[in-house]
Structure formats: C-alpha cells, structure tokens
Image (cartoon, rainbow, N blue to C red; front, top):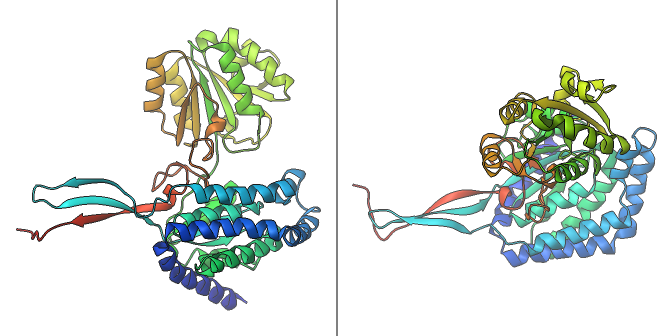
Length: 419
C-alpha cells in the first residue's frame, strides 16, 4: 500500500508540473472563461454535490462538534458563495505578464520585473470543502497548477468538486490536471506529497497549529504558513472611548472562532481605570470571559487571573486576556513577546503615536482605529485570498492572486555586450 501511495503522489505531481507549463502560458480570457464555466457547473451539479456532501456530514456527526459540522456542510448559500467567488476572481486583473517597473541602465539596456506564476502549489487543509473551490480558482487565475489535499472528513465532497472543476478546465481548453484532489484519506499521502520537491514549488497548509507544524517539519519545499492568530488591540491614552469600545466588541465578539479575532486587549494605564469598567461590562454582557493581569484585577475585582500561558493563547472562543501597560512601548514589548505576527491594532487620536505603532509593530497587518477583523483578503480589496501568511518569504499577510505569483527579471537590449 505504501508503494502504491508513493507512486500515486509522484504521478499526480508530475502531471501537475506538466499542466503548470500550459497554465502559465494560458491567455487571461481562457482562464476567465474556465472560471466562469466552473461557477456554472457548480450550480448545474448542485444536487450531486450536496448528495456527496451529505455522506461526509453523516459520517462526521458522531465525531465532530457542531462548529466543524457547520464548516463541512455545503448549503445552498455556501454553494452559491463558491460560484459567486469564482466569478469575482474572473473579474480580477490578471497579474501574469505584467511589468511593475522598468529602469534604464547607463549602457541603454532596459531592465524590468515581470510577474510569473509560481508553478505547482500544494494545499493541505481541513474540513471546509469551499477551500477546494476557492484555492482552485485563485491558483488558476495566477496561472498555477494545484494539488489539493483536504481533510478525510470531506473526501466525498472534495472528490465531487474536483471532477466538476476538471471538467470546466477541459471545456475551457486548459489541462484538467491543473486542478487535482488527492483521492485517498491515508495520511501517508500527505507525507509523500511533501517529498515531491522536484515537482511542487510551494506548500500552503490551512488548519490547526498541529497540522501546520507537521507540514513545516516534513516538507522538502518552501512552506507559507501561519501557526495561529494571537491578535492584539492597544487602547492608547488618547483613545476615543466610544470608538475603542465598538472596535473591541467587533474584534472579539463578531466571530470569536476566526484567526483575526482579538485575543488580548492592552490598555494604557492612564485610561485603564476609566475605560476598563466600561468595556468589561459590554464584553461580559456578550458572554466574554475576561482574564486579567494583577493591575486589571485591581480595577475589575473578581476577574479571573491571566496565567502566563494565556498571553500566548489563541482562544478562538469568547475568552479575552487583558493587560494594563505603562505606555505604548510596553504594549509593543508585550506584542513582541507573545504575538504571532498576525494582526495588531492601536486605538488613538495621536497621529505621532499611530505612525510609530505602524512602524514598530512587525505583524502582517497593522491597523489604526479599526478592528483586527479586517485582516482578510476580501476586506482589504484583494478580491479573495488563499490564506494569511505570517512568514515573510515570499508573502506576508492575506494572499490574493498577486501573492500566488513571483517576479522574473526581463532585459531589453539593442546589442549591448559586457566590457
């Protein structure tokens, strides 16, 4: 069985490499036509898709919690969102072949940087079948071939979606192997996929921290990752309290189970006694459990003490750590010690402090007077995203179509030779 899986993954990778050469040369209209065809076929095969999805949901109900079942289920709304998302990707500008800048050397040569596809991308993810469609669409638009390995709990859904996406590619005159889904639930397939560095240019894992660490430890090729989102909001001494409260509520309560939700609130000591009781009341009424430092506990008696481990924690739940800090430098020091380079925000009316915070905080998205929930490709105007990278090579932050490409140098001469 082991040899069979090894051969399967090598064959898939080889076919993806061959397909990637054709995908890279595909005209924008051909890619857009295939994306629109994907959307049409998803709607056309709604009944078939949901029938396969119901098998996954039924099998998972005994093992997964309600939240994961919800992410697994393909409702009419989810399927329409998939189709609409593909149509939106088709409307995005095609980055492939664009030259961002060009300069002229003293000898008259013109030098430029042209956007090109990455090649073959492997994506390993959990639960959500919509990732299969989103990732395929974005990789197609950027001229890449993609190998998708979803969670075993969604195997029927993903296999069905893959056959539909491949049909759309072929109808659009593009290679069906440009989108492949690993058809086995055997975990050895992941290990073998991570060994295909000869054919796969990049791996993107999406899921829990344990999955991402496994991929990082075993991959033979570059990995774009984010382990977790320990996101902070710092309420500065000059903050507008009404604004600060609204932002904190949105960042923690709107969707606590996502990676861009606030996990730690830092408050300047100059306003802690006046602001903390106000925001704590609103948060508590929304069902948020607060865990505070000793200074916070003094201001809000009865609060649970925050342990050292809490400052590192991505709760993904209605739990919030709170710390009073002496100044902005103290807030930044805390973020540097416990943050995950995901998303941080400052609430302030002081322009100079806002500017300093933007410069000094080293996270993928840094905001002034806005919720951490805006660290999202769609919200930032990228159209869609394949994930949020907290590693700096080669992308940092939400990864849209452009982040699925790289640059090559192009040189235009008229006979120059090097002396």
